[in-house]
Length: 362
Ligand SMILES: Nc1nc2c(ncn2[C@@H]2O[C@H](COP(=O)(O)OP(=O)(O)OP(=O)(O)O)[C@@H](O)[C@H]2O)c(=O)[nH]1
Ligand SMILES: [Mg+2]
Ligand SMILES: [Zn+2]
Image (tube, rainbow, N blue to C red; front, top):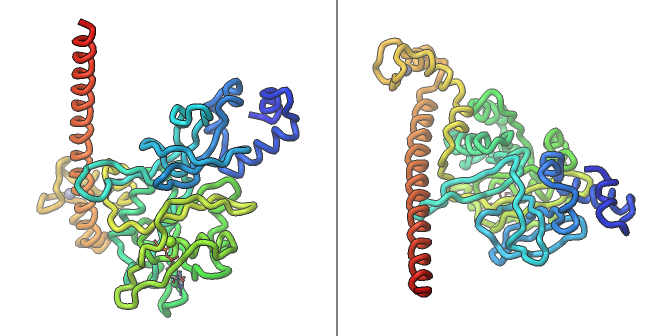
């Protein structure tokens, strides 16, 4: 869409104000992928707006000349673009997403929870302390890859250790295709170190446990200390769950940064391809096993056992892969079951309503 298209909308709108609107949208992450989904004719009635925060009371949205809170809806999440219907906000149309992060909601209600949409880069954050955990890193990386987002591993609190290279080497074992950076999140380093991913119009997200420095990094990119941060517990390095909502921060002249609350529990579901990509080394080897259904236990001609014996794969990594695959299979089945039940319930409700209506008529 070019400024003339915008200008054609309102005969009153000058090309100048149209290009200003377009610049506002571009700064919010608007790009051809979204523009292709709309027609110029509908633009004036239903202008695009982005969900920049999820509050309990509603969704905060921003657009060209739009700054509003609309009622919450279960199918929208932070980062989403919608076409705002001002008269009937609930009817606002959600645009197709470039990427979507979701997890299995904690607790027993077996639902998928939407975390964020339209993220370009996921910074998977951990610290050079007791938070560092390969299984958790692999989980977050699989989550990002499943969501079609490029992950980058960020090690914070690099200033607190003397053997930084060994922390970086450990993080590199997650995947040899994922960049690893290490820094002191406080102060000047982050804008420089993260600049390859933090380009104007790009949306980046910080994910990771509480206390690893996600808000500290967001502040550092914004050049402020507007977002609250809080010291971690001395004994086990755990954070205090300071951030409580998912919010996109607009960095002047730069990217959009999603700060998220530290997750207590990250359960994967429907993430088979993300797991396969994360464990590409193991996945590739398993295709070379003699038997197609090799369990990589005691079968002859097992390429994975062979790689372990020759020290090319860590047996602990194989165990973590198995565990993640099993968890994903279990959660995916349980989500599918829940969806079937919900559908059956919906059908039943519709049938009852129909019966009641026809009874009323007769
Ligand atoms: N020394 C040092 N301290 C850091 C670094 N990054 C963060 N911190 C400190 O770690 C504590 C936790 O940082 P936060 O930014 O609040 O962590 P968070 O990830 O946002 O945590 P939640 O909001 O609870 O999820 C704060 O006291 C920060 O000052 C770092 O690189 N070096
Ligand atoms: Mg925080
Ligand atoms: Zn095998």
